[in-house]
Length: 111
Length: 112
Image 1 (cartoon, each protein chain N blue to C red):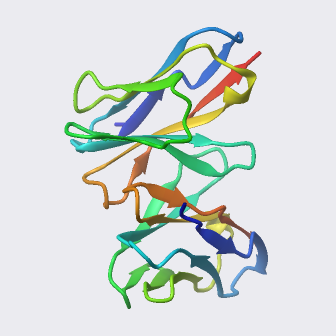
Image 2 (spheres, each protein chain N blue to C red; image 1 turned 45 degrees about the horizontal axis):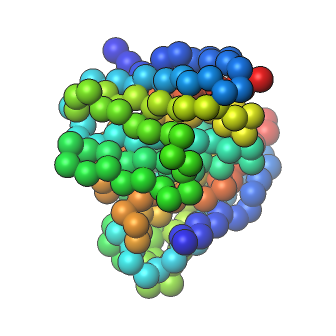
């Protein structure tokens, strides 16, 4: 059974701060790692899909890195804004050919 | 235009009833999914389906069954509803199994 874990569970930062959170996943039978952004009362929205060890992806102020050998991914947000407040989910695509989601990191950006 | 749509948005029903939730995607994707958001807000995969293969999460009771009339639709049928089935159910689609997924708005099911 895949066990995808995210830390921290929640995070409060001030507007303008940069922040990062972690996703850990089993490194065996790894195919892909997804990051999603999930705002309250909306649906999860895809940010990145990464497959190769050492992959780095960037979208505006948000970036992510991937280490498949040790089984972790970091998501970075530079200069956090109130509109970045959301739950950030990672999901690993591994054995069983299905996506397993972590519990998410809930980010709250205060003005 | 909504890429992935689900109906109904809310569904309230009695224990023991049979109900269906519909999902449609207009993205031309080959693969569709159903997820359940459990009481702890975790997203759990229930089914992954394309026109060749259905993959079932073995923890899903066989009261739940996906039905796909065509590539753009994957409906979720639930027989003999139980209180524990109350949850938000999300449909999603992707170009292939490893590609990013596009989620529908969710259906909140309440079993009384």
